[in-house]
Length: 359
Image (cartoon, rainbow, N blue to C red; front, side, top):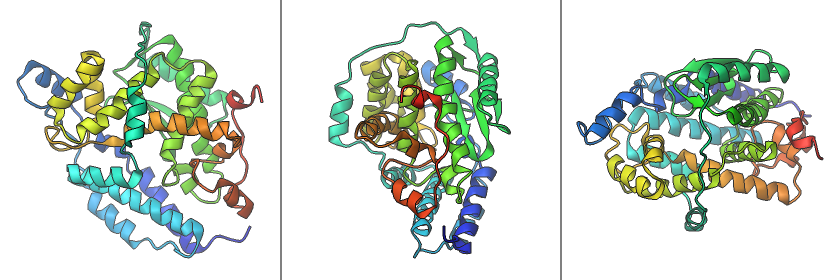
């Protein structure tokens, strides 16, 4: 393999260091979700009065990104330029908290569902999971720690975190799994979250860290849809995907289009008519999180990647592409993985037994 240009490696390292310094999710998720929900549901506040950590670091980090100069005559340099621009859009969204900033991010990431995708989402059959929640966050934390140890993911840590919308989150650059300390879990969730969070997110990040560019550990620009889609396919392969996942994710996809035109309360009521009040708050909060005024039309549309990604990864694998190509790091099914391997920019990495047991 020809040595990668030094300016490329320097810019790649600087972008990775940004992801190590700043946990974006801490600035995306409201600090007071429980209190805001109580105020909203009591009627004392017309819209949930979400509060956020201020992104005081945004302007210095934007200047840092502006100073990066990866060579745009190198294929990986152009790829890194796209990743830098995507990071810039995320920072603008967290700094400005405006519908326009979140819209720019969604357009660049191709998160808005097409009419064909909305129609597919509308066709999902209703199903729900009635299994009882039996485990607390501490029990899940221990199970994840054991799973990391079993997979030789040394240096990875599991922490309880109270400022999260998700139940579990993987922060690859920090080698960290965060578990929502307020969440409760089903017995099946242990195997489900090991398959989803460790067998996909953690292992792909670890594999990427062994490649020449850090970008393959943090994720290529369009890898997120593949990342979350593969995680749901892993749940399927492990036989632990929750009943009704397709239907619930279909509601989320449709709710993204509603949120572009609705404030929080109207969105909440619209979701409730489709899926009940039990799901309405969680979906509405995730789609309106980050926005300074949730009462305005606007959406953080990232959650479509689960539904759309699962179908995209299924189709890619069904077409005969090897799953091993998705375990060289955090790459996407639309990336030229084979070409990058031929150039020596990616080398094969271990594939979890989940995908090789019946190969």
